Length: 42
Image (cartoon, rainbow, N blue to C red; front, side, top):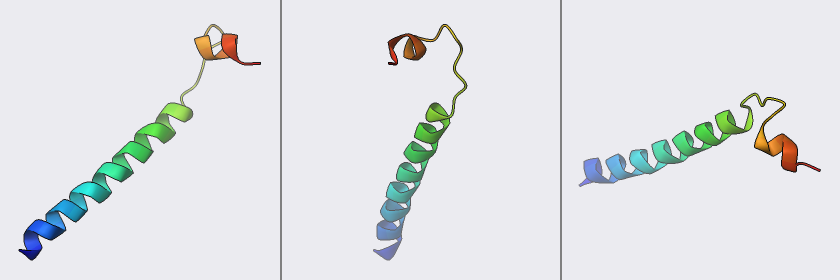
């Protein structure tokens, strides 16, 4: 029973860490001059 509980807790924590890491890599991605974000930024 505890093995199943630990498995799901590890899966949730791993998923959250994975999503946070992907978001950080996306935010820190180098942007070019012709990027859409640069055109729409004030």
